[in-house]
Length: 111
Image (cartoon, rainbow, N blue to C red; front, side, top):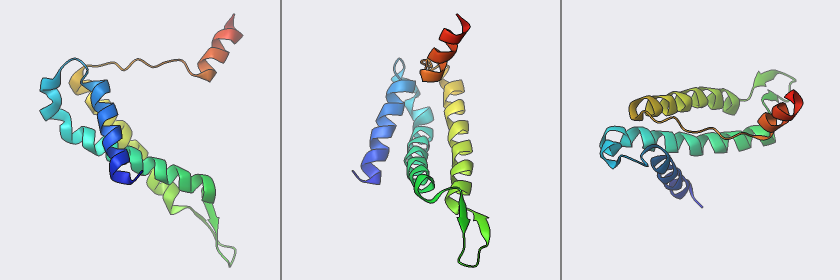
């Protein structure tokens, strides 16, 4: 699947999450949904690059530097989180967070 198709799928997923009850708000937030979808696809690609290359790069001369993908990832992640927070504030939706494996572990540990 190419980037455009993946971004379109993410757009539809976000749209269904945020606009499940009110399609009239789509015009207000449509561009933010598109930007968030694009960023999500880019973040996934950057994440894959970081997994294979690591966060630190060492040159042939032994110089150490941060992986540029890692820096871009952190900046993009911050922007993505801001967009999602803004969408949530505009639409007044609290997306229900489901418990993950760590949450389940903590529940068991507390009992």
